[in-house]
Amino acid sequence: MSRILILYGTTDGHTAKIATRLGETFRALGCGVSVAHAGRVSTDAWPERYDGIIVAASIHIGSYQRPVRRWVQAHAEQLSRMPSAFLSVCLAVLEKRPEVHQEVQDIILRFLRRTSWRPTVVKPVAGALPYTRYGWLKKRMMRRMVAKVSGDTDTTRDYEYTDWHDLDVFAREFAHQTERTIPGALAVAASR
Image 1 (cartoon, rainbow, N blue to C red):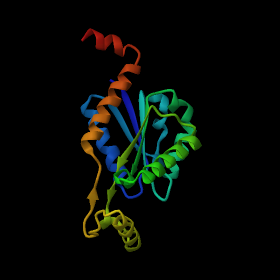
Image 2 (cartoon, helix red, strand yellow):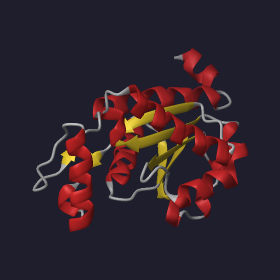
Image 3 (cartoon, rainbow, N blue to C red):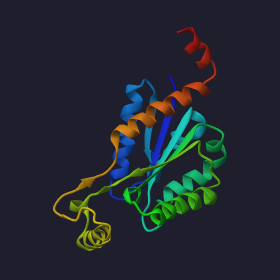
Image 4 (tube, helix red, strand yellow):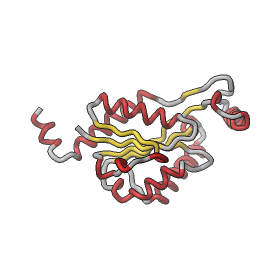
């Protein structure tokens, strides 16, 4: 059984929801899982204690949460030597314009360069619009931004754009990848 750490940073709570859901999926697959908020990591969040690590963070104003960046910088060398994935959560994934996709890719690459991390997988994930949790100013700003791309602008409700099925498929593939890196896992798999 592989052990997986899911470390996340969140601003409005949706990345925490993604991390929790991934944790549930990995547990259902028989993996040992720790889900930790980057701003509150304990000493158990050391990479060498795990067979695979997923870092999930959301883009806000062109960057990711500072505690995520600090943790990744501190452990980049170890993370780069093991199965690891970076989930970049943002609404821009839904955009059709190539320049917006390029901007997201630039933000991801800037993060990876600054942290010196070379993850096995980089996966952009669509986020959410939790209008009902925003303050009046943020609600108004988000509504204006979303209206420019003909998005959902009814601020009396929340919108979730995450493809949960796609995340489940990702989790199964990542769990399989971590099993292959556990000493003896191939021999066990071959004997089945």
